[in-house]
Length: 114
Image (tube, rainbow, N blue to C red; front, side, top):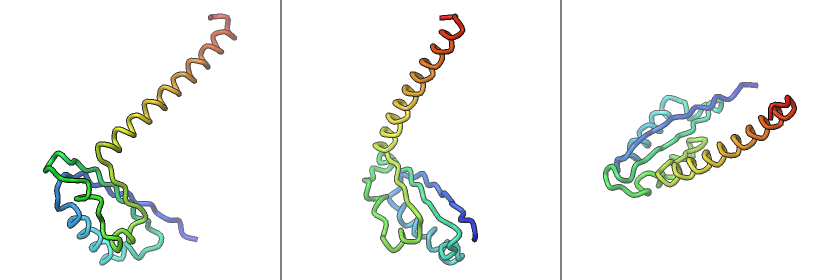
């Protein structure tokens, strides 16, 4: 049994022509045989900026289904997704800090230092 290799490819863009660029990359991966290699899973990450060239979300996310079929996954990251991730990480960090605070208090009580 062959181990599958997960490949992550990232793009940071603000250009309306991004979908054409991605299409060119996917065609290149097809021609090289990378897409047909079942042991390689291609995952694409697209960070886009709507303010750079006054673009809209569809300038990035509206990928033709036949192109998307060549990828294991395609993930789009805009300002909304970034804010959601920040909120999630802040909540998680607060939870971790509370848990550490409780653990430290238990240790200090056990040592008689609290």
